[in-house]
Length: 316
Image 1 (cartoon, helix red, strand yellow):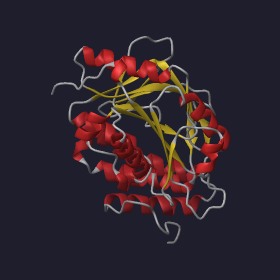
Image 2 (cartoon, rainbow, N blue to C red):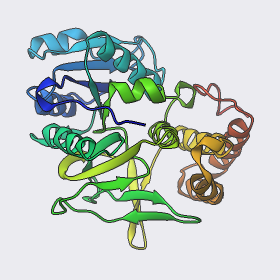
Image 3 (cartoon, rainbow, N blue to C red):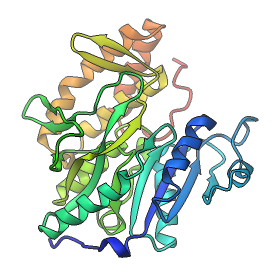
Image 4 (cartoon, one colour):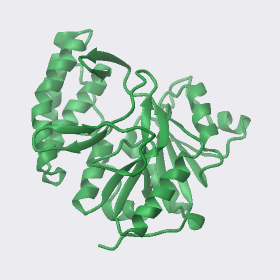
């Protein structure tokens, strides 16, 4: 498979920003960090239109942001919102998309460094699927680790902005990842019935199955926030989420476990992680018994393919 190539001067990058009850201060920070670094900005809003505090197009007009704002009217999940943004980027003849969560912030030269690294890899014949920054978790101060799946354990490779060379990863988190449109058209778009969680991992492993490789670029740095809170366990800070997010994490893990395209190493690791997820999320929940029942339902829903947006999951 011959890698697709593109020159720096010809690149047209679209930022796809997904909103869900955004914090205006953080959104301002993100938009300001992108204004001179991308050709188009597509803001896809998953906030339900019935909510009185939902942001509107006037927010962007009053601040002279040059963005295309698309309110979906309800929460259709991050994968659907990303796919809407991708289709808009294609319609505007962009050759790359770069995804952002509403609480991320790119350093001034982050996108240029990602594009430059991608072009260099392509020039050396590497079949690049995506490139992404290392990120600093704003709550913990932790620097992201590079994920590679071993035979039974996940290898977490430490990295810092002082490193020079791209580092191959099995997947990159969606926020900050730069992907060529040509790759998306070959691999396919995001899997919408996952709704949220594992969406970026599923796409990356699907791309990897077709021979595409993913790279973290240490010189490109981004601020990002993960989870609602965190707890320190030994030498690690583990991010915590609300019960409904834990449901999606467990449900989608169970579903992807059945998908042979995800590869043996990923599936082996997930097989052992699922019981740990159920135990840990139940213990750290404010309503342990309710959480346990919810996560057991998540397992059943995942194994039986009951995906999409979860409805009435707290009714047993």
